[in-house]
Image (tube, rainbow over the protein chains, first blue to last red):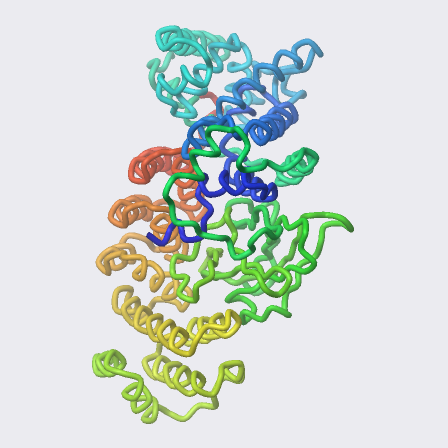
Length: 185
Length: 181
Length: 210
């Protein structure tokens, strides 16, 4: 088939990188950057931390590339690294007293309907996400936004499938409560 | 009035699923960090690398052999209109093309928009030692095949852009589509 | 025009004959970059296309691409002739009001395997330009999506989606494929998501609560 004639499938690129063609790794970075950024931004609540986690994940993935067991699933393996990086970065940010909400100005009146109206509800959703416990937020994002199957989530997070199902359920419940509170303001 | 649970969650999910774009400077930062480590070497004790090498597979060499060209991130401006296209007169929009090529001496942007003339659109390095090359071209609506020509000899398609499926001349090309009437 | 296509399909000499009956045109100076074997044949194909009121610029660009890439005369001529045929089929499918860029995009879609009926239907359901929907269809096929899935997906979105929605849809499919999803599933999932976005955009003026 013509699709692989350029030789840039993940397997091909990983093979090249392991063969010493370091520069080829940039192909994978460009390929996965945006999709993984979405998870990181929602998990961490701000772009700066998300980009730090993302950059960190890519570098770690490069360094441990030999340990990627199945290069055809490089993306999923990279995902697992990112999830871990987000946990570490999130913890660090919390220790620094970092503001979680994306827009600092919105923090002061975050339950404000007017702020939400301006951004079509975006900040209310982020604010609600921020109030979830991190494990619940992680599970919710992986399941409902990144569309991972539970088995995949288990591999990526290290938690069991039934624990993950419980976390997703709790996340949904919490979100509903939080958002209804916001509506009442 | 409360909305039913599913619809509330569904609207949250719909919002969160919107694509997020990251500044392409991240790629350069990653590659700068990656470049500080020694390159991987095949034939080490890594089980996985050995398995790949011995797997029967047709080897397709990139036209560059061992040369630079890591990845290109030529941008379709429709997806990032705020960053790469500025409206120009007569239905033209300016498009930015970007490629990472740390060891190249010259890079040309060549395609349907400039008669495939390699001298027409030389790309510029972002800085003196930079690995990032850029070029900006005004484009009217249409679909354009293009590729990067490195050091006058090696053709590079853009791995981050759609591939031109009909590469009947034996070298890969990419496609950029400009919308509008 | 049918006569032209039959002749074009049956050989270079025939194409040259047809060109001889068209109004004489100064050959495009850019074709000087072709060698002396290739140049007259390509010039004749370009003239024939012009006589059939098809866009000639894509043909010239294809020939120049071949010249720059140092392709053989055979390959250049085959490429230009193939494109000329595709442009003719594209015009037949889209009708006489199709713009040159639409025809170019349609030619690529047909070459990728899209049925002509899909193109005709696209023209029927979408008032806006077809450049982007056709390009998205072609690019999806290049990413491995079966052409029927790609065609159905684009058709279902084409009536209401803006160009930017279609491009985001394509990017969503490519991201999912890169992460290991089977192309057809990735397409179906992205269609469902895109349909929600497109419809939400259409009725968007509510206070910003989720």
